[in-house]
Image (tube, rainbow, N blue to C red; front, side):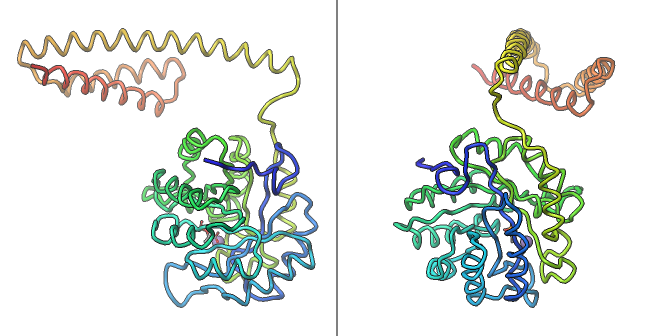
Amino acid sequence: MNIQPLHSWITNSPAERLIIAGPCGAESEEQVLKTAQALSHIESIRLFRAGIWKPRTRPNSFEGVGEEGLIWLKKVQQQFGLKTTVEVANAQHTELALKHGVDVLWIGARTTGNPFSVQEIADVVKGVDIPVFIKNPIHADLQLWLGAIERLSNSGITKLAAIHRGFHYSGKTKYRNKPLWEIAIELKTLLPELPIICDPSHISGNRELIPQVAQKALDLGMNGLMIESHINPAVALSDAQQQLTPLALKELLGNLVYRQTTSQNPECSDKLSQFRSMIDEVDDELMNVLKKRMAIIEQIGQYKKEQDLTIFQLERWQEILRSRLQWAEKLGIPRGYAEKICQLLHEESIRIQTEMMNKK
Ligand code: PEP
Ligand code: MN
């Protein structure tokens, strides 16, 4: 995939994280300009965001001001020298955003989940040199996220980035949208050149959680942050709970620790490679132990087959879990971690034995 690094078109250096800020929605010319003016004093902000068309769960809530808002965004560019970004959800939004000179488009979570809409957008931007950011779909489906990125790439868009805004989660969670960092990491592994930006506002759903989510994103090497900021969050027409005043945002950005991905200091690199070779050795041992375990399981499988015994033996499994968790506890290994590993080992054991049982 042909993807241009952020520093080739928006940030000043490879180490700089792209900071995007602005209100959830553009509500009035005054609100947009006042917010933008205040944000323009925060040096690290490179992009001003505002939703013009708001995807809402129920009708009759604030659905955005539409095309008129694009004229306010033009003023933001002219008066404060900030680049702008809006969410587009269909071909018509995209045409209007292009017509009014928006600098960057973003595709929202609900739209990413709909390949028809993504393709519509991709068709409109074909042959246009416009950056596009793609939020993860609502549900934890990496293929759907990848598919949307591919559709834009196939249209010739090279200024691409993904935005991790958390995922719908039906269990108990303190987040509005649960951050599934492992999915973002998997995306990075598949497309190493694709920048990934984190949206702590939509992950958190409230102001209190934003700093820790933002810090975690930076610590994991995410390439930027998109944070909602409103001149007066208390009267915001959407996402009031999670928007920060420009002043609070400035403080938050100032308190974050921006760690480097690599160190220039030779002593530090030396130390790191020492640790890494220790880990390499331990992992090598681990693989050998796993291989040994597999070999024994094959023998058990063969024996059970000969003796006409079932593969799954509930009591044995309960005993394995009980004893291993006890051993783990003694060693100070967290219970959840030990449990996951036992589950994995057991699943693989069942798989191997089933294969043997089915073998003629
Ligand atoms: C937004 O950015 O305001 C928005 C609607 O986000 P998402 O698509 O992540 O829900
Ligand atoms: Mn929002």
